[in-house]
Length: 123
Image (cartoon, rainbow, N blue to C red; front, top):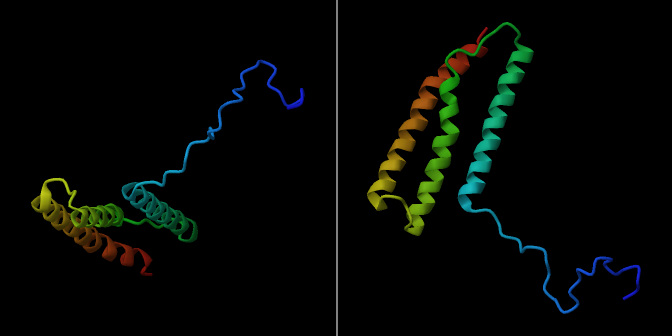
């Protein structure tokens, strides 16, 4: 080792051979699902901004229930995976209850939000 490459404070350990960078650990399935849910929300917000840009002075009344859909779909996917792995909270009964609530939330969001969205684009 030359003098230019040496640590001037002497903090080097010449005997250490292990790499100091942490190993890569991929994100869990739940974190990845939440990230995709965030992408869906950002696209929805972008759609609202574009609507305000291209239809100035018009509102989107009643379209807010559509924001319930991404979280219900994400929770549905996560619960299905946990039921498949056998790690659902509350066991099978709790998982099936969560799936029913997710389906009801998705249906409610779509039934209340889609007609309002269609009415907003009507002339």
